[in-house]
Image (cartoon, rainbow, N blue to C red; front, side, top):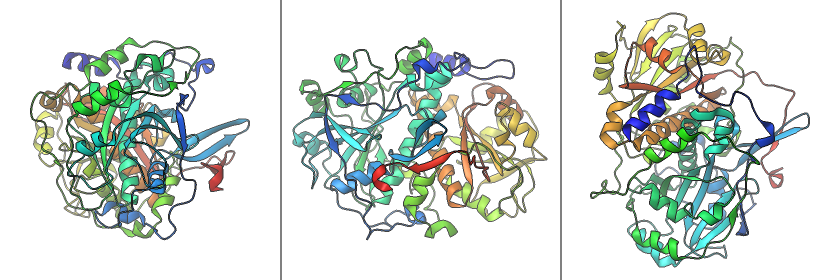
Length: 548
């Protein structure tokens, strides 16, 4: 299985002389429909009222555990949880074309990620315990299945009253339609973005959210109904990704339930509703995507599993920055991807440090949603930061990785911590110089990587991490990258800038710049932040008519 993962990763690399295989053009006749729904399933319209007016939340409060009082679990809270994590943030129009943007970002705005809830009855909402699919288009839930609520009660025993599960899946075809074989990578980025979006939306309500580490993909597929062949006849299948515990409490004490044979059995003997809609009239098969999906499915746990409540990330909750007073809901909804930067504006050293600090792991959102030690680090091209020398830097998100980098880099670097950067921000200067042209060239020649304040590559401890956890952890490395990307997106908005995730970069040339060979480290995702140039030919309206 590990050989399959390494083979996929190498085959889907971009290089100066070739790109990973794709169709090479966009077949608009087979463009996937942007919204999945289940025809024939019971639809439950979520609350359309605005957030609780008496519960204003400042942006900085999202990152301080216990800072926001826990909202009661009711119909409005469920609505707000989904609206500020996976809902529509805006509609864009250019001429006759109109398309939706979502709170959770996606490569190419293609949105392969689907969201599910596994709930008990909720106050103010005439529903049964069951599995529900979220439809962002109309902000509603579709009831796929109902079961005895005592099953979930037993599974979540020891957690705060009202705790429930959230699940994420991927429709690979949505990304493969445009990006071909590299699409599996982008789907996993998007899962990471969605995990962070859900964690911060939970924080908005004073709730906790944690990824469940011990569930096999087979069990997740059964619980969410993804293994039901008849329900997907003629439609694009969904790949199970992860389950999360959502606890309507800010106490920080949760018990992460291991895989439940009882819940799996209940789902397989139950009565399900709805058939998945077909998204495209035609498809191009990319067999390597299915191969790597199979190779990275987590098998059923053979041992006792990870300790309940494990959070392996170290560090301390971040201090609130000057952005603390901004309205959290506004920041979550206004997140956008920049398409161009002005190439002139600088950012302050204080802002630069605040942005980097938000990416550092610790027991605060969104990092407390993850259970593994940080394995992704940032290689930064710093272009326009007042008081900081332009050049090539490295941010070590796990201090022990410094020795590994030094031992594998076949270049001599400065390894100097900038005196003007606080010691608690583990940034080192590798080389001084103007990196704008190099940054753009490495990111597939995209000007945004050079016209920004800074651009970066997310460099994963790759081979050793996969050997430690197993091939299935390949997905988790991309999830961690997506969580970093979401933190960067929101912090950019909070400081009056804008971010852009970059999936197109030349993989091995990035490694060569660092002086790295082999699979010890691999670049998984690029990102850039700067002062955006807006396209004023486009018009923007609210995500939902009832919010006008």
